[in-house]
Length: 178
Image 1 (cartoon, rainbow, N blue to C red):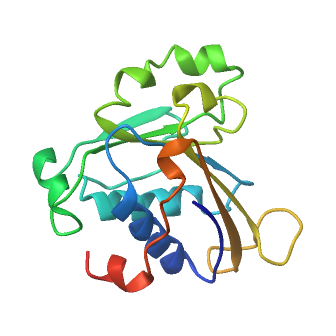
Image 2: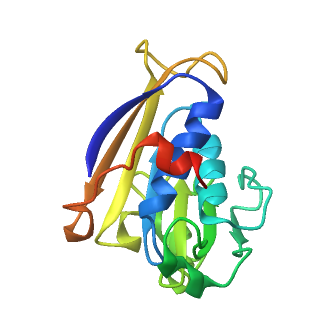
Image 3: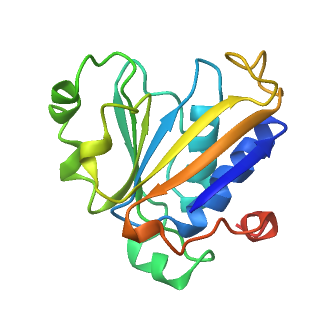
């Protein structure tokens, strides 16, 4: 999966997260990068909604990591979008200084049973999985952080490893049915 998507609003960012959730499965790692206010947590909220996890999904900056268990049994994930998926581990590496500090969180203990999303994980979380999604969010107008929640963003989704070679982002109407 290698795609670029322009996202106009915060609701659209959540919708992109729901679309991603359709292809995510237990063991997947998603690394998010982008400036403060770019929409990393908003995207993760959409992933959580698409997976059908207990919420609310909020920024884990001060607790560093949160686990959101599924609302329905994980075995239903095999039934596709109508059955919900695995737990969501949502981590924030913003206050971490090294990959060793991230390793101390033992996120790899959960990766096989969960979808793991790491905000600010670029340069720190790549060791969690050989196959992973790296998602960079930036202002669509260029420059630094988007000015507000409804400023257009450019989202670059890069699939790393064999797992993501033939995966495509589902169309928006698939996520709308979740």
